Image 1 (tube, rainbow, N blue to C red):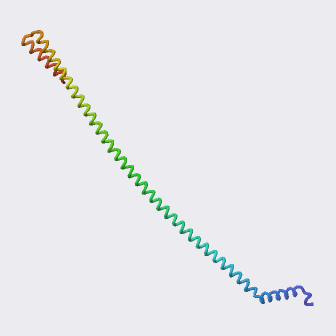
Image 2: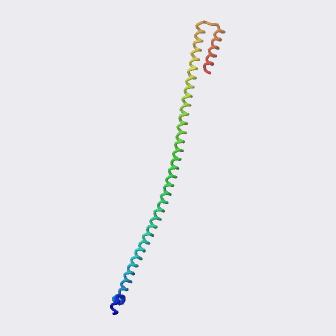
Length: 162
């Protein structure tokens, strides 16, 4: 009769099943399980948020450090340029001193060579004058002849000096 209808039996079994679930507070178990799952997800989300903020802070810290390092690099480059310019200026000054010293040494050598040349010319003039005088004495020239030889010796000496 009524139990022969399978739909009716299934309906009664379903209602009995729901009553058992209600009796043993299965919905509370499901709700508590879902709440525990939601709490776990919330904790994971909070941890992920904390890790994200930590990563952003770390990234910002690295960016600041990179900017500081770039500033230090620029300072080092500027300092190296200044030192190179100072070294170049010092090298230029040293070169000027060396060139001036060599010019002075060359001028001293030229002056010494001029003095030596003048000395040689004087010595040659004296030798020529002495030779002329000796020739004049040896030839027993007259006074006019002797004067002429002396004048020629002086002229020769003057030509050799200039």
